[in-house]
Amino acid sequence: MILRGLLQAGLDLLGEQHELRVGGLDSTPEQWLELVEGADVIVVDPTVPVGPELLDMAGDRLKLVANFAVGYDNVDLGACSERGVTVTNTPDVLTDATAELAVALTLSAARDLPAAERSLRAGEWSGWDPARYRGFELSGSTVGVVGMGRIGRRYAELMSGFGVDLLYTSRRSREEVEMELGAHRTGLDELLSRSDVISLHLPATDHTRHTIDRRAIDLMKPTAILVNTGRGGLVDSSAVAAALSEGRLGAAGLDVYEGEPGVPEELLGAPRTTLTPHIGSATYRARDAMAELVAINVIAVLEGREPVTPVE
Ligand code: GLV
Image (cartoon, rainbow, N blue to C red; front, side, top):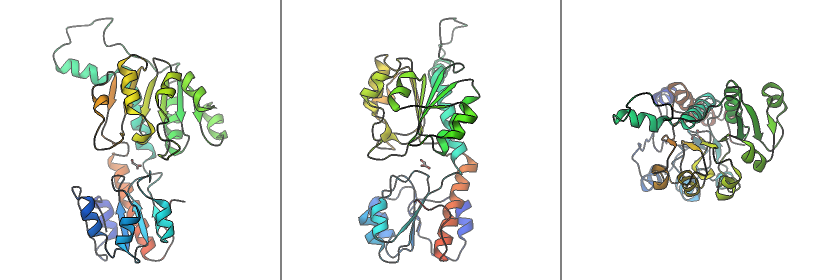
């Protein structure tokens, strides 16, 4: 049962031996409820909330919810575990792609590439002007990595190539990151007040909701660059948009939004902002590997084996 879609790479692995019901990208929550009836497996993506209603509609045969994403805030883990349903996600295979997008957003926000490009395309570029199109450079700056999981770690590694000082927050200290990259672990408030770039790499939970709110922004430098490739809920978008408009925040590079696929109106109008449509893992390599991992997990569970990447 595939509620929206799975790339061909995953379908090829699943082969012909299973009955596949595919909802399609335009399918609605009402259709999902019909589609899941009697399913052994449900394949979902971050836009499909999986809660008691959907699970109960699937019924007793349901063994697995396979999420086509590393983040699984769309899945009610408690409701799955109460019903004995395993949940899998797609870690590792998208780490490089997502960290690379975070670097791209960092650079784009620092130099405000969207505004420069818009200006050029509008025919406004009238010649070399020493005062125009200026931004921030990364070399010598302090970069704060909020959350030192796989993607945060890879982002830190890539950013270290720019000759930056690295700060990070993490529930536990990461000695290898400190040894290899010279990163220093701090509390969130200290990281916010010392960093020139702040990149979010946290899962979305009740605890991390609006990690960047008005209070956090007030701690940040007015020139700070905020990057979010995690989940939209990590950021209070109204507070970020207001700070950008009022010159209390330097720039923002955002890939994820609360209420996707809607994008908060105030962000669309905010200055010095690079906005991308949730494309962190959208490389050919990563998306194919994610689809394959979904299929590998599905096959394992249907054959009575342990899945490769269960959500613990
Ligand atoms: C995408 O957003 C993911 O969590 O993999």
